[in-house]
Amino acid sequence: MKIFNNLTDPIIVELFNDGKIGIIPTDTVYGFACQANNKDAVNLLYQTKRRGQTKPGTIIAANITQLISLGFIEAEIEKSKNLLNIGVSVIINIEAEKSYLNFGINSQAARIITEGDLHNLLKKTGPLLTSSANKPGQDPITTIEQGVNLFEKNIAFFVDGGEINNSPSTIVRMNHGRLDIIRNGSIDVSGFLKQNLS
Image (spheres, rainbow, N blue to C red):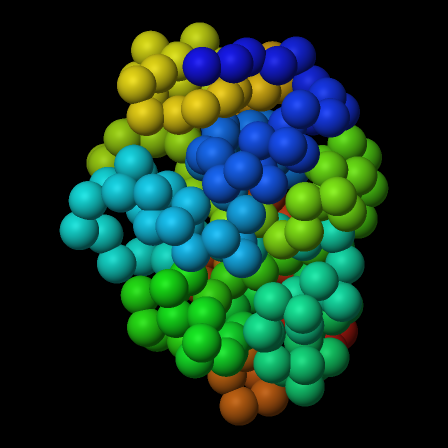
């Protein structure tokens, strides 16, 4: 087990490239994370989060190009890009060959990280699958010490981002040309909806 003080350490990229699972500070909360293109790592993340779960995690990426390369449907990304680029998680259809990411649902929440250390990390690792770092039915951890206490045996590395008490991401779904709010979270999209869907 390794603990890092920030996301800039190059060893973190190596660990993700080697298929390891980490707990990192995302743009919202602490989350489990692994490379989205690594099927074995994805399966391990879901097993660590909760065996038998069927709720897909969220894909975070440095840019829209990464999402398209992963298999998200380009036409749907184009409709959603204004929301993606402000950090809203948008549920978008993804190619069936990536069904290991979403339990065969073939759609998944994704968002773009546009700045900061997490953005720079994603440029090197490619898209990451994330899921809030918590036990079933509990709130996400707020410190890395909590994460170590709960998951030391299951997680290869941890990145300490200090105390984090943020809301989880806002999630919306495209629905025949309109957006439905699935979860109110860190970003208020009510103004966007009024402006674009009135």
